[in-house]
Length: 166
Image (cartoon, rainbow, N blue to C red; front, side):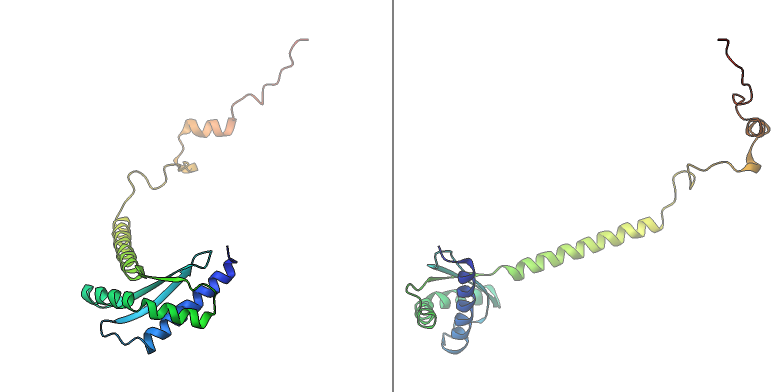
């Protein structure tokens, strides 16, 4: 098992090599507007997965996938030549789902924003079900005469102190 840092560096180098090769040397007419987004190498450095995106319709994406499969041998030999590894990793191309996932997340964010706006609109027009402060204390001018007497006299226990017979 190789060092993870070495595998990461090799994956970055493979991404650069494949992107340069697709831009400069591979002249397949089926190859559409391709962007190499990421690459990953297994821990034993024997398999490399290259992730790509294609701008266009489903037919153009399928044609680009076929063009990448046909150019796999040339790309692998160039990777081996430029990296100088004893064993050149096998290359697998995978269409990256990042754009579709980003659109799905964007739609979910718009739905959440619309739901939040609806809740905010309902909250702005809402009124309390009861009184605004259910724990409101009565003010001094709202007290009854009996309540005033209780406030002045207290409960009476403090005033009547008698000693218990011993």
